[in-house]
Image (cartoon, rainbow, N blue to C red; front, top):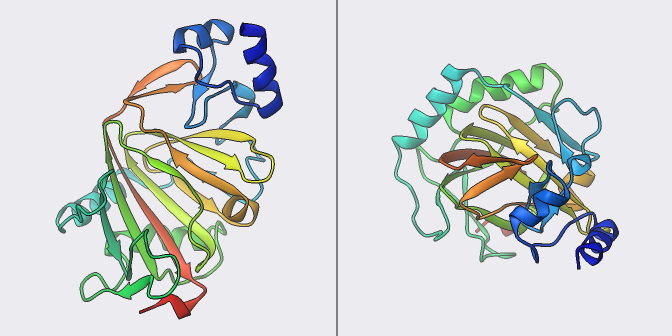
Length: 244
């Protein structure tokens, strides 16, 4: 049975969850658990790698501690939307409901939510000046607040959003999973506090991303507890016909 499991893993680069975590770690003590199964260290990405996934940029420790605290203070001083059962959210610029895929998917929000979070402007400007992204004005931001084992299902950001999607991670680390929609290969990347993730090109359009809902993380053989993680995702709108 163990040989069959390894053979299946070689075909898809994922060891399925049909075995216990202890059994998996006996096979390979450096495994990482993803939403789709276990992956080996070969497929666990890091900031030190020059080539992650084509179009994927990961910037470790990009924000300062003061910038992180300012962002948290700004969002925590605003009401949270409890409509999403899996996590709390806030939105800026345009409100988007995941059930709306096409017409009237976006609704312009009233002041003060009609613009991007003020505390995000300094790191966003620095990203542009350092050449990590082209000059652009983001039109939509969603803040996701994950507590404990909360996660998000595999997805690509909607097609009416633009070419570049940018994420900022605050507080606790989390493993983000990436799955290619063509080859079904899986990669894992540890998103650390104050890090920035930029997705464009293949990473934006050909790879789904997700976060497992497991109460604990297994990253390169080590167990990491899950506390609170807050993320801010910034997007432009390339198809304005979906605006109500």
